[in-house]
Length: 234
Image (cartoon, rainbow, N blue to C red; front, top):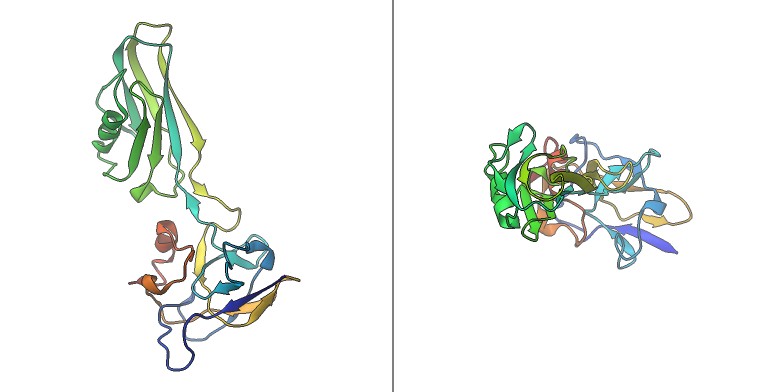
C-alpha cells in the first residue's frame, strides 16, 4: 500500500504562511517520517497525508502524527450507603464547601467550580444524585495528568460510609513518544509504506491559520500550548 504526502492548495504564488517549522529559522530542512505511525482512514483518508498535519517526534527518532492528549476522568463513589451527612473534595490543596451525601452531579460541579483554582469549563460532573460522580477535566486542565482528588467525609448512617476516588482515565499522552507537538507537515514528496522515507519539509513563516488546516489535523489545545513559543495562531 502506498501513501503520499502532498501540499494542499494551488502551486505558484500561494500564501503558505499557514505552515511553519518547529525552529522558526529561515532555512528549510527535511525530516524522516515513520510510515508505520500513520493510520489509513485517519491520517490519510484519501490516500494522502495532507499538508498541515501536526507532527511529533517519536521515540525512534522519526516523525509521526501528534498523538494528542486525553483529558483525565476521575470517579467519586460514595460507599457504605449513608443516610445523611456531607463530604468535601480537595484539588491541589483547595477544598470545596460541604457537599450533601445525596447531592446532584450539578451541585458537585458547582462546588468544584467555586474553588479558586478552577474556572467554569475546567470540570464537568455527571452521574446520579448520590453518585457515583464522573468528573471529567477540561478547559485549562484539558489533556493534563491532574492530581488525584482527595475526599473527606462526615457521612452518617449506613455501614462505614466513605468517599472513594479512582482514576479510570488518566490524563496526558495517548501515544507513547508522540505526545509533544513539534511542528507541521509541508511537502509533496511521495512516501511509501515499505519503510520511512525522507519526506516532509517544514515551512518557516511562523503563522498558523487554523481555518486552513486540513481535517483531522491534530492541533488540539495542548499542542497549541506546546507550540506557542514558536508559532502565532490565527
